Length: 405
Image 1: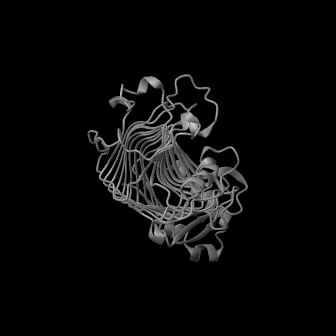
Image 2: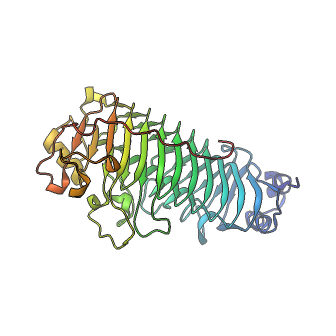
């Protein structure tokens, strides 16, 4: 394998000797254009100011490797050109590892139409105060196949820190998302495993969404397990109009209009408004113009999770969201941990008024798994905490079929 030893050419000593930041940027962009199959592009230790998006297209079996997450920093704080920090398209078997990318105008790293993308020990962050002017996504693979995100960190995204959209065969593991609007989000994606992560201090910890108007219409077979989803009580700083702008501060795990989702063996702790929410798209009150879109959650299994709240289970839900305020009015500081909006069509129900198997929401063996059915199709007038009809079990979903998982 050919090795591009940029660390020798672009060391801090060389910068001091006369290689400017502009020279560094020009050289690395040139290498990303010229890189050949099997090459490793090495980024040296140091902090490097980058003024424009770094682009790579149509490459195969390439690694971009820094000296370590605490050693190599690519800063876009004075970005003049482009929106993304790094953008990779139409490629195959790409690995990004061991560096930090900061303060991009838009997304930190966007990877699109790529088969085989690995993010390993990469940090994506905005270093200032939380702001709607921060980029939307930290790590952002979209329309990809065989996605692995491990040992990574995302901080300060105005949408989602770690986001995988319209993709297939996904593993997100051993990573941390902090102080984002959404910590980790899986959207319109299939065969995804999200496990052994820490989502803490976000507005919402882990989101599984199916949204209308996208190229890939429907996700499914998403497993979220063995995660710590803790104290996601941060203010929502998403730009106006974004779907995640409707997420209530204090949301642990949120399922929106997604089907075939299994949530299990998680610690869902100190999320003050909703431990786990299961909502139809109608709950957003946004119009649906996509005729092929299915707006209801279906075949959801939530089992063997642990729910805890501080103050002996008495945490005040947010007042800065209409649902949180309504919950406070009805339940005070003792809000149930699992919330279902209850929006269904009549033909979803059997003669007992319970969801038919093809639509079931199943809850089982959840510690402190108190339940609330908003029955929102009745305008919240007949909400109830009756779990009858929801105490059921579904077959376990298949693990993500990812090579070397």
